Image (cartoon, rainbow, N blue to C red):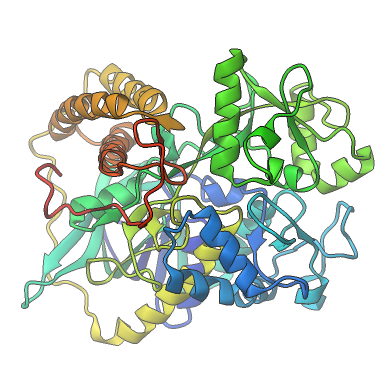
Length: 546
């Protein structure tokens, strides 16, 4: 629990891979508080199936991984960042092994048990392949890698005397102040406590935003409910730039079933030979890309979207029934069991799938150490835009980024912490002029309208006409939401609504600025890709509306 006013050296907002990694790396030299707005596991990390991309095979090379990343990112990746991250892939995996993450090895591959981390070596790890990768380089724990990583790191964090894990508390806004030179710095956070229903203050020498992405701004998503872009919205309101928000990745294969909420069918199935088919069994990916089912996600998602619209069907099908049942159940036990609950035996039946919003490639502008435009404020993981992913994130590069930027942030904080003091004056939260809402239906109505607006007008295939319509409507919605927020006491629902409305507007603004098709941003008015790749950067200091 936290009190009405609390202090910590480092406050980490978010309890996924990035947040827990930073906590563990920094806890030996500081007091750390990790904040989760719900249960600790309710982040994207816990549900990640695929794995972590790193060059461990002697047939593979760093140059090949770098080239694959650039190809997927369609030239928009930052070359220095890409090389920095990929060259340290083995370092990240070795650190995870030391923490005890039970990865699948070559000796237990195809079995439903995990390894003894103490005896594991990099050369013993089983590698699989995913879309966009030219080699097998995905380290995994069967088909539930995120769960294995999360549970291991959470256990280590819970045991550490310098780490406090706090659930059921949602960040409201960053607290910033200007120093004597006029430079803005972060000094803490306003936090809504679910149980007390009050807004508390946490003072911190450093704040790290690790809140994940913003795919909940779309009607259909593979993400858990909390992916409402909180960190991106808070950073923007505090004065940070954001970049490349138009690049929202749609995962090609989410389970299509009325009761299967947000369940992802891992890309690893296609890596092991699963085929995409129409209802009549016809394969179609070869019409769109010579790599077929192993093309990057943007290409596969657009191909599925095209075929669904062309044929008028509700879904397409993923077929892995040609593999041995024992192979399927041992390699994909989690997916097998989950599908079986919905009456789909993937050893015999095709899996109905549709694309869904999955990953936010843009975010808060940072450097390789997670540092933002505001002193003592960091952004790590999906909340950030590091330059690694460019116009399209390649499969399993995201967890790699989480670990390595967290490593860099911990190093940066360690160099600064002795020279940073707590602020002597932070204003308490003022709710003297607000009341309890008597019209919560406005929140649910606006939430639903934004998500439908984004799905229909800012989706997989876009047009200038639809983007302009979306821009006009989101401005009206944001005015309504701002007015509601000013007059009523905060709740989880209106805080998240406020954030997704802002993030939706940022996505639309970035999409309107990019007058070309590149990676995840495909616009029918500008189907060609420009020769020069440029980031789309927005600054709140030059925006007329924050």
